[in-house]
Length: 328
Image (cartoon, rainbow, N blue to C red; front, top):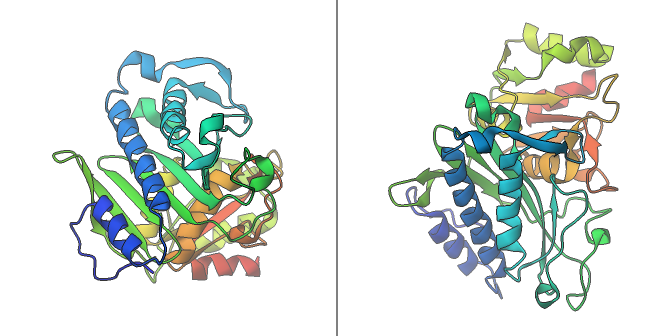
């Protein structure tokens, strides 16, 4: 249970340490892992500040597992996380959008208790035009013996047992938002002291949903039910707000009220967003903030993980508007 007495203005390190005191038999490993992720995000933020330099913006040859052109910064961010986490002794496996297969630590670090799934630089194709990008991460406890290497079976066929979901939005300010299954709290980076400061305590979706976020250029590819749902949103006071960077769209809707949609269509028949390191962490946050995430039929946190790069449709935001999907 997170400490509700924690005050606006404390650092994220103080916040994590204070919460650890409330957990019997805590070893500090989970707190240390969160700190490793936070430090990695600070380094990525620093790299982004120089993203106007041509070598960061140029695409390198090749595509990632999803067929997206890989930008240099995707690789930089991915390497930063692997360099820190794999040598921390805290993780048994990392699953990243940028790697075809799970990545494991060397033999001397195989005893890590946690699995991290991560999208290192969500929305990186927008960097060149100065649109905010982000990092999305989820943390699970491993199930296999700590005396052996972990494997992909450690993350498959799991539901609703994510320990932590979070994201960092690199925008006009850098914001960290995460939950460990209680409240959702947000921290803003203060570059003068080099720390994330608690600025958004116990975030909840507003009661009123004001906007919808979807790429309507795919309208003709949607099925009739999705078209009817979007038309209903328009006719019931929702205005369009779409950045095209998942973290940025979700963050705005979390603070101001709204729904983000990425439905399947006639070309992407299983959806396009990735379940493990995009949809599950954000849906975990949404649920703890009074919202909801669904694939259109099932709660995202109840969807069976059958493949590490599994794709899914996503509808996420205010719970009452997500529930309205059932009518369509």
